[in-house]
Image 1 (cartoon, rainbow, N blue to C red):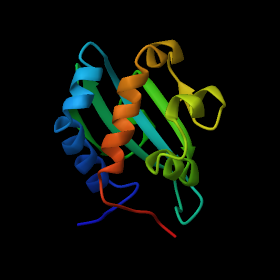
Image 2 (image 1 turned 180 degrees about the horizontal axis):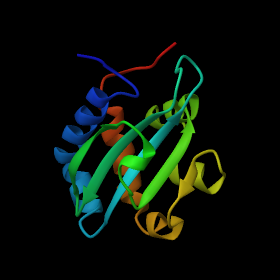
Image 3 (image 1 turned 30 degrees about the vertical axis):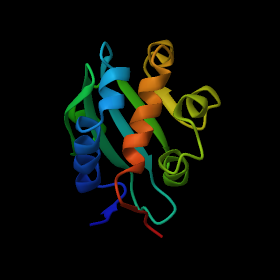
Length: 136
């Protein structure tokens, strides 16, 4: 099965991959924080999509698409156009490098994320394991 990114189904499959990943569990054993991943409109995406993932000590406690950014108040919000998220998922852009260079816009404490670069890398590895289709 292939999942359309961004979607609730894709995010739920991502959560499953995170929770099956021993390398992520080890890299993020002491890390916690929840995220909105905001995919901005464009490139076949008519409106912004907000994906939520709650990460807690090497596991994803929950995840899915939310109706709007006002639904919750996560510790981190990362926003970028669809083409930038695609580059992250395809491992063509390191997420920390993307935040430092402004390709991914972060609301939250970058230094907390930068203290766990292996965890960020393993999250991307989990995303690459989700069979993904992008809008055209």
